[in-house]
Amino acid sequence: MAPYLTKEGAYVLLVIVVLFLLLFGKRIVWYLFSFDKRVEKLLFQKKSSEVRVGRVLESIAPILSDFPVEIEKPGTTTQFLGQPIDFIHFDPEEGITFIEVKSGNAKLTESQKKLKKHIEEGRVFWHSYRVRGEEP
Image (cartoon, rainbow, N blue to C red; front, side, top):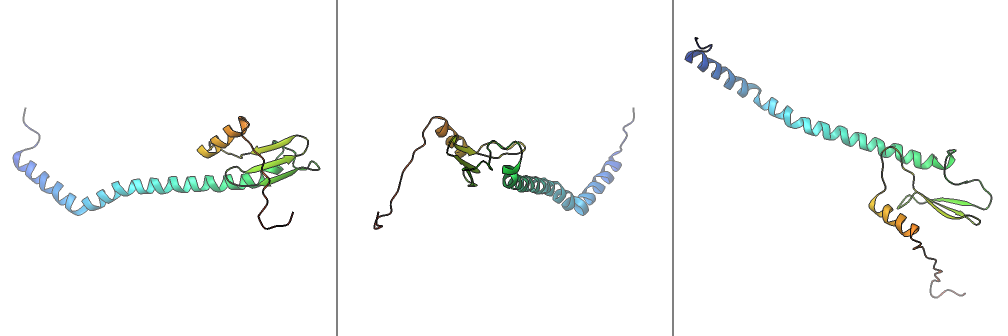
C-alpha cells in the first residue's frame, strides 16, 4: 500500500500550515480567548437584568394580591428597608412581620439567613434610647 503523502508533499503541507498560522494564527488565538470574555459579558448582562427585574418586583410586591400581609388594614404600617431585608410590617394586633422579596432562583444571602434564624429563635429585642443632654 502506497502512502497517501510523499515526503515532498509533507514539506509542502508543512509550509502551507506554517504560512496559514503566520497569517491567521493571531486572529484564531484572539477569537478563542475573546470567546470567554464574550460569554462573561453576556452572563454579566443577564445577571444585571435579573437584578433590575428583582428591584422592580420589590417595589411593586406590596400591591400584589398574594403579599403576605394586609398593607391597607387600618392601623398597620409597612416600611421598606431594602437591606438586610426588604420590608417590615407593623400590626398592633398581629405583631411584627419581616418580609424578604425574592424572584426567580434567588436565594437568601448569608446575613439574611442569620437574621431569619435570630427571629425564629426569638432573639429579637426592644431598646428605648434617649440621647444624652435632652430634657425628658
